[in-house]
Length: 396
Image 1 (cartoon, rainbow, N blue to C red):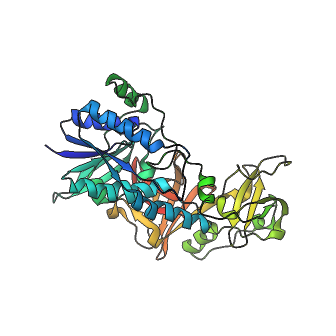
Image 2: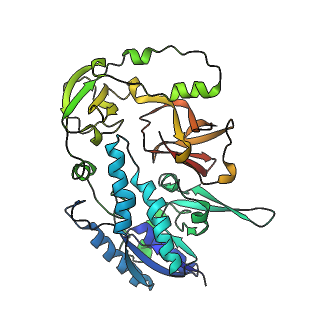
Image 3: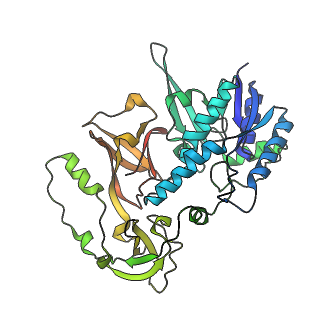
């Protein structure tokens, strides 16, 4: 009998994942990851992990499977939280959920499971795994989008490797959310009607600005509003000698100086803001709401523009540095000079967008058919061939 360790989060998806695996004849062990108890940084006045841990224990008892809690808070602080603070300090916007999957659930947690003698780990992600068998018998693993297009979480798994996928199961990937809740209700699982977590991976509720302010000191600066007809947006398109030069041109962000617009307010630190952000600026009196179009953490200035259609929000092309590039399917990796037509997204829940990947010695360009709003440094771009996520990278 194959042994599976399920990451029981105390939510309905992982609860049903454990139930389905038991029904399929696996020997199932439930493991709850405790990822936070650092009193120097308060994530929430509540203690959601205790409630979640108790719910996970009740589910395990109901299913008749062994259960234990593992403390991964040291690894979580080093690999996720400290990384987040460093990225925000540099004016970048990290994605902790993607990192948590790569660094915690499918690395530290996976190793613990293997040490327990498990053949696989399983999670409640809405994603699927495919297997391609070569003529020589070797296998390639596919990361496929979840059957429920409204809940597809393949984007959050975009940094997984072949080795990690080989040891992973996604039991709810073929189901829709309503079907998962129905199964939980039929099995009388305590999590059947529990609301989905909105917080950080396996931590719970967190107000990110307050969280950041505990480590990154407030620093007063100015908010500059840049008009939509600023000189930066009137650049005539030059003729290009090669494709790389053209893509580098379109990937270039406009650069701003304080005299490019007017000062309309003050902020408490440019490192607390991200491109595309609207909330938290506290500037009124404009016909349309202000959106952040750029942050300068060195000069501590936030540049803003009026309305969702402001040209400062849009770019057609982004770049991923070679060291930040990841292929879930290494056999499909591009060589310098090669290109690939894909569908891509730059954030979770974004509709997939047509794009062309172009590989250079230094990295990879993603050139979109339509300009994209709020391309943000530190976030992940993920690209798909059909329903298969084949690669991803950190946006530069």
